[in-house]
Amino acid sequence: MAQLNYDAVISVLKNYKGIGDSEAKLFSRLIQRQRFTIDDVKKILKDIKEKKANSRAYQLIDSLKKNELIDEIKKSNPKTYRPIHPRVLFNELKKEQEQFEDAFGVIEQAYETCGEAREESSNGTETYQNESMILSKIQELISSGYCVKKVVCNNGYMSSLLSNVSNKDYSKEKKDGTTNCVIFEKKNLRAIFLVIDITDLSGVSRKEGIFIPDSNFADCFCEKRC
Image (cartoon, rainbow, N blue to C red; front, side, top):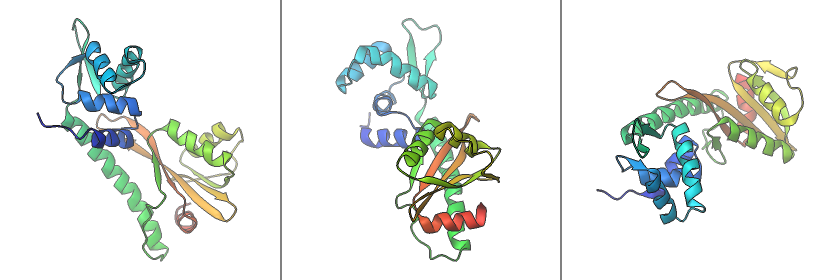
């Protein structure tokens, strides 16, 4: 059996699936197994020096099931699990990559339609794989002194999100549109936070965020799409 590059697998899982470090390390060891039990998981966790391996094993199994990375084999005794086939994971990640490419295509188009020189828009760009991470980042921005300059909502999503984070009603400050985004400002610096919908192969949709700390781009994008 070929030796996996565990670090590469862990990085992909954390960046694209949005799972935690412990879950990614565990799954990177499970992916080459056809089936496994809780005792196998405990042994793996001890091998990778996970603290409280015996109790964490149950928590991590639940987390991997919730993220649809493993499933339980019915009527198995003791309980036995199997990881999803690597091809299923590959197809799911490929679909998400295509959706991100579409989103970044919109971003690149905004530069071009403004007549800006084409630049690398990825400098400083950060992505957030679920709504919890999106909320945390927005809360961090507000706490660090960024103020909300403009809110654009699709069905009121962004104004509701901001209100939950800041305890301020943004429903009257929003502009309705097809994009979910916020323009933040701190002194003379501006940044844009975009939220897009990602749909996995099973048809389940989730929100993912893109943060771009670029004043020129924020102004340009806002002019064309806000």
